[in-house]
Length: 331
Image (tube, rainbow, N blue to C red; front, side, top):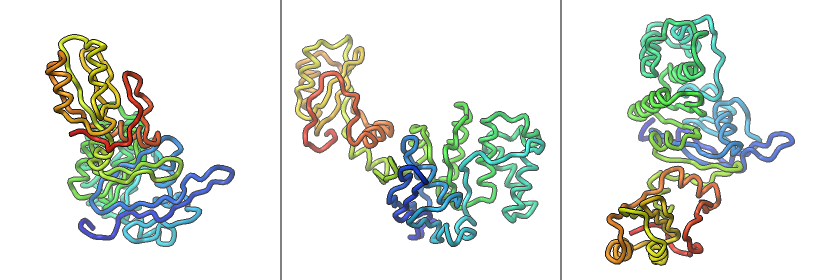
């Protein structure tokens, strides 16, 4: 499907109203194209899991439609899920079976041949760091190991689309790293990955594009590069010793500076508009006592907080000016 103009996933005006609650989804629309790795982000209760459950046919939408590879998930379930692997909630595992035995059972449900199941199961389990545990009973597995196995089970049949809801939940740092490498491998293979996670750093490492949702509504649907352009950056000004109040005030007075925050021997300069590096260099290096200036690029956490908070980071407390009506960024 890579290269096709048919979306692998498409939500059209999805609404989900649970009885006695506010709308979990409110007119949510988006597309995921072949080969994309998309991070689905939002606070608890934003509508992420509801969306994923609709696409995996665990619940139905109140209105609107969801499609996988052009197939309506409500009316064409079998076709829609034929090339889809998902981890939504921890699946039930038989403690008396080994991972290989469990995957043999799952593979037969998928309609795979026994020889293909054995080869694929070993390959996937090794990639997920479970190579030494393939013949161990699952009753001996930790929560994190069960999570890793469940991800392997979701991709056993080599699907085109992989949908994962909090895949690294309960994993230690080593396990998180292994899942990151695994997902990056799927990306290199041209698979489409739709990933919901609260670990923004992991999303940034794996995904090309993000969807931000809050209160059931899609707030942003862009590549990370485009989102970074839309959020003002800034500079880090370095000193040999703690800068004086006068130095900080002079930096804060430069056109385009929103805040100048002192952190030990450095000052974080946040952009309210377009800061001219020459102006900053003149004030900090020529007229001041700074010995270096480094540009700062907003990371996914900065972007997430600003968009979820409606455009305000709510953390600017040092020498800050009122927000100006200027374009964000630095030059």
